[in-house]
Image (tube, rainbow, N blue to C red):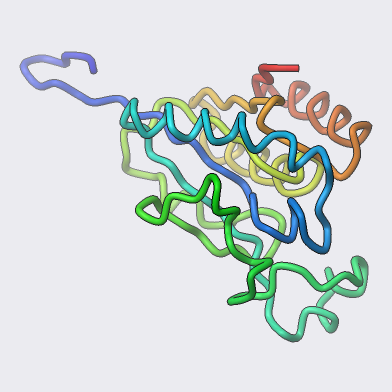
Length: 182
């Protein structure tokens, strides 16, 4: 917190947990890298809650018509169908009392409405897949909030492959998104 005049202004960090859902960890599109980051994610989320950070979970969300969508034609693997077990946030890290956002595409397009007007001074992003949804949301957030520090914790992210994970981290660094961890 900082004092401005006689009023105290609370500064807040937002921890955004991208798409850590069963289908991306152990299900249809799961990877061993996604399984491996779960302990790091749990520690990060627990620490964020203890610090009073705003914790936001996103859920990749598709309907039964997934195969007929543009994404479904390019990635013909049904996943994260709303209401299924694969769509649920992984139990080990889920916090039902935190904000959950359903997003129908790689990047959530309403961050300004959700975060605008709050005293957010820092955004940290973790989750999966680094090379698809993490990078998409990081770039959207950077464009919307260019004066807010945005960090991605590489130790709490997993990509489709280790190579594309590293490429996405490099691309985000090029766009002035701070990458910490491995």
